[in-house]
Image 1 (cartoon, one colour):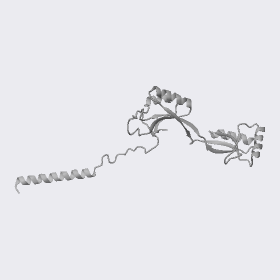
Image 2 (spheres, one colour):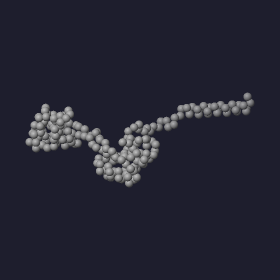
Image 3 (spheres, helix red, strand yellow):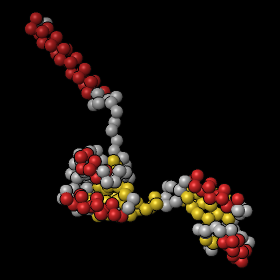
Image 4 (cartoon, helix red, strand yellow):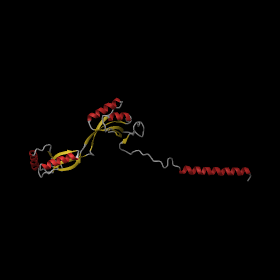
Length: 216
């Protein structure tokens, strides 16, 4: 083999090694390997980032709405709707019930009969007790309710007062549903509010939040 042939052979070997290494690299390479993977929620309300465009296809799946809430009073709902209308957004509203809260029920245990419950009512009247009613259905039929309180100290105060008057009152934890209102509009029609506008609304409704969720 002359010198020219040897030169070509050497070049061939070098090119073959380069291609083999490149193939090995491409086979084992994974873009961004080791970096954290960002996952979108599979369902349910998704918090919107300030300024996130509603026409972003990741932010506006079909049937999704931008929602402002929770709002505690109907009058405030109308204020929020008027304000967003000034910004060119036609919004609707709907009411939900938050059943996650628990209250404190002060009561007299069920009497053995309706007449016995009436006798207890007369005794309450004679003792100057007000704000009570007889339970007429359900598992606590013929019990006498003495009030439902959102704060434990108020319930204990009522309990103590009743026991001083000679009535065997008790306290039980019960659901305390609360109405909540939301102002909403389709995310495909208008974007989420930016930080400045949301801050202006929070001057009137301090607890106001902004989420994306299925339209009601």
